[in-house]
Length: 128
Image 1 (tube, rainbow, N blue to C red):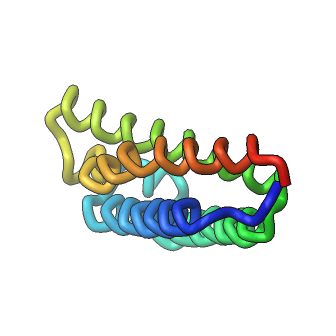
Image 2 (image 1 turned 60 degrees about the horizontal axis):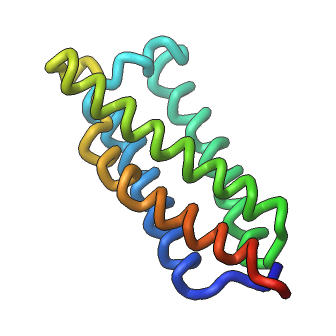
């Protein structure tokens, strides 16, 4: 697999920014699962580790590693589902604060995720 083009890089950076915004929105909106993870400190620590893994995938995707590209496609799919979940839960329950915060940034994840998947798959199908 050749190194990815500009569209992959830009789209990946956008989803990373939306991901950071999403975690921030969950914290500020008091997402109910924060307490299930053992409180704010543990929630933030878990998200720092997860984000670090995604940065690792991004770096190796930039190096043209097929395995990183495939795992990045999986990451984008999880982000789409995450965004959908927050939005559906907010609509169904009518709760945002002290509930299902993350819907606004979830919209960005829902929009950006398919583009990232498309560009990554296109790169996988390119002979290098």
